[in-house]
Image (cartoon, rainbow, N blue to C red; front, top):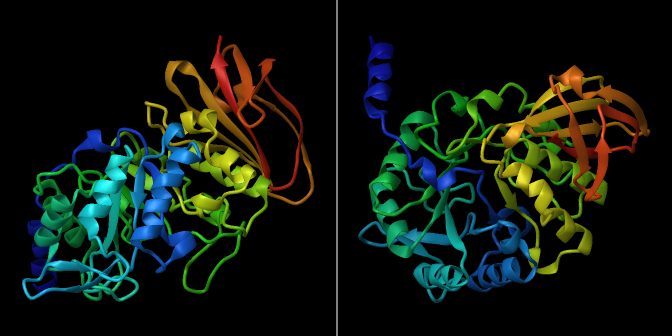
Length: 384
């Protein structure tokens, strides 16, 4: 009986509603402070990031959200209102949001579904409506919502509470669930949030694995198999933020990482120091042809079509009958391949374009040649 009563409590708490799908018709693009700066966030840093998003050409390439991750909040006041750290954010959050908006960008914040955030700042549990109203008053456009300090709580119940609160706040706020894929959110979160994390935390490496669950992006890539059917306009699988440009990988590895996030229709949330990027990092993050694959209006998540160990082929259908294709060498030696598009269900006549060299290969029925270690051939096949 206790088990039945608990299930009834969960179901009664999860009243059906739908987030506004128009807020994320294509995967959100922006910048988040955590991967590079962790708790070292401040008003000054966020303003500099907003300025850099424009000066580097990232805004022109499609990035629009500036998101402060953990550690901006310090306490609650006597009325229960969340309070920003006055030393790090002396002008307050609304003034900072106004600054970001003045640049033609959108502003995001972070909170947690538990009693405290991952850095033990105040969480939003039992304060969902109050916090959502506060975010709306401040001009927040995007909320990343984590899953620390949640002992005894249920993911679907907690995230639905905040989803409803955001929906009722009177402001359009993109809702990003960050419960690390623990409750298989792709099964239930479509109407609760606009995106949901599908794995543990990404690390700035090729294939490392941490004992607490963090992992390199290739291991995260492996966990995206089979999830493609749950993604689409307004509801996205989120394999976590980008590590491009953070120093742990070579340029070819960063290029491969970015290529796959584009093919997966993943949110493109840069996590590097965009104020001080190398030319190579800037070129990767602002490749408009690669980004166009990510932002394709069909919103189809790419999927693996061939796995030969170190060599893989992934395909993403695009509007107009076109395709994006990645030929991936995840091993160390250069791999020589000979593939035909028809073997992957791509039938017809296509002109191939190399999206990193930004050059046309010509009308071909496949590819024969070498792919260097830890690199990709990222192609757009244009129907003729």
